[in-house]
Length: 377
Picture 1: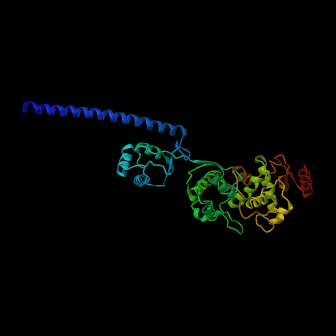
Picture 2: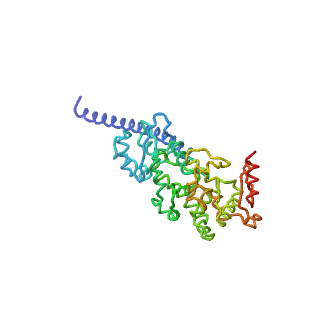
Picture 3: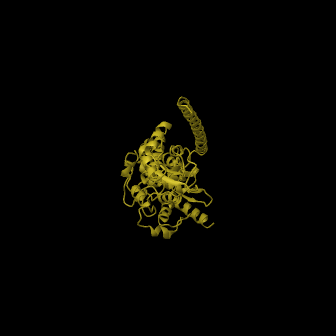
């Protein structure tokens, strides 16, 4: 074949091949992008429906990773490469910027699946990781709250958490913490200030993160409720209000709390021991024993020297015995009055009826007769 024909023919063949390769490449690329969009759309839909990551420790083949607070995209890329999820940190950083994910990664415990693309990894890590949801009802002690978190699978160090609860100075940036009164026998200084509520924790949350979630809630409620101002107006420190509220929390139903608070305040004003069964039950719980509806004399004797024993020690115990809720706190701040409860200033006793209510008395003889009647049922 003449050279003048062969050269143009070769050029034509090369052009055809290049065009063919371009079409093939476009087709493959379009197919990849379409399939990738479907995978990402499926992932995003699952996030939208659930509110957090669709993968957890129980997902088959899921691998756990933890993103530290304030970790940069580079930090995350290097961690992913070390764990074998990606092969190129530069590509991950570039795609993060290109996709608008840079700076959007959520700290906490995530779960990835082997073989995920860079984009899929980014979608997972920029959405909220699945939390551990725990509800703490009013009246739980610190020890009970700690055990409930451990039972839910949280991985904090319980000894370190104990140490932090004993040292509220670590959290002096909260307005109520400097008001906490240290006194002999008061072990869990933050007890009473771990606000009862439903929380969503990261399974690997640090001890400080856990406590700050509780304390943030406490700060908000105390300020919004005007509790600081009311405590000052009635001449009680906020710490004493929370301490008495923790006792009221355990002593009766919600509708009776203002009356129960009034009885205790009457006793405090007349220098009588408040003699609360709730404080003895607290000591029993701290010793791993079961509480009672009616306290036995042997239990009072067992804890005779303990400052939390309000039968043998006058006044309030050294600190709160649990985490009280708003109703109990407001019962102490706004107790029953003569206007709302006739004879309010004269009641000094009450006892459980065994039916979820209390019976109030003005004299010891009346009270003892009721105790004998109800406890014999």
